[in-house]
Image (cartoon, rainbow, N blue to C red; front, side):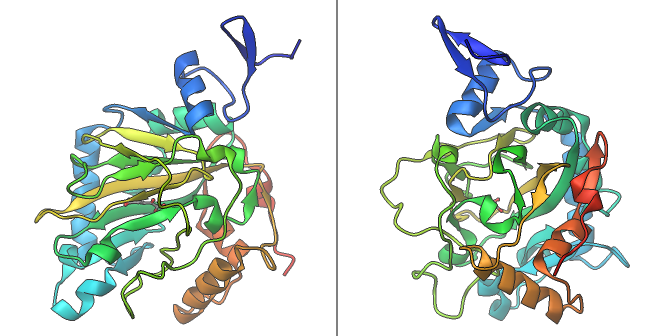
Length: 314
Ligand SMILES: O=C(O)CCC(=O)C(=O)O
């Protein structure tokens, strides 16, 4: 007999591999994540909080936040059109040291579920408020099929999890997430810019996998406050915004504090490491890929561990 924790499923024992606890996940929810690599919670984050984050995003876009700690990304297809502010900015990232947006990363409802998936000691490692402005080029406003682990120099993958919350109704018209259920049981595939991407129009670091065009996907249609949690090997992406409105979502990736940093040189992740290091250098922060992830991170639950104690060997 296997040792606990396991679930008895039709008199057959099922051993959990991708989740840790069942304080906030029912057996059914836990089993769904184990099998599919994601789990959705309806109306998890309050509308009041999301309205505050939306206002803060607009304040950042309109230059009303001075001395902020965040990184602003623009949709390159809109750069030549004269679009400004919310009509141009497609992402505010690295907000873990921004007092307002950090409230999302440390929202108890979110962190409790994450802790059930990856374990009690939780470090927020990546943070994004993602906007899809109207009128962006279809190729640039979609997010190609990818696995988030491609971006991360730490393991094990099963102790990493993303939360992604819709800030408004998000469906097929304005660019909902889609996912390939069960693909978290695969391996990490090589990623790069899609060949189809229009010449000279490449949103920075939007790498994707090639050759999965016929794989069945599910569209994750969500209402404001709905939150999906997913594994970093899950193949997922999002469609273009075909409406005249905006599409906003807020997302944080969490790692168990005792994840170990790895050296990605010589692996399929070298291309993203090189690109991120070059971007950091251009912005005046000449640090290596692993160090950058440590500096961006912030403990949100439990005790410090490897993540906080890591010191670069490079
Ligand atoms: O919000 C989106 O459109 C997709 C985001 C995503 O998949 C990612 O950043 O990994």
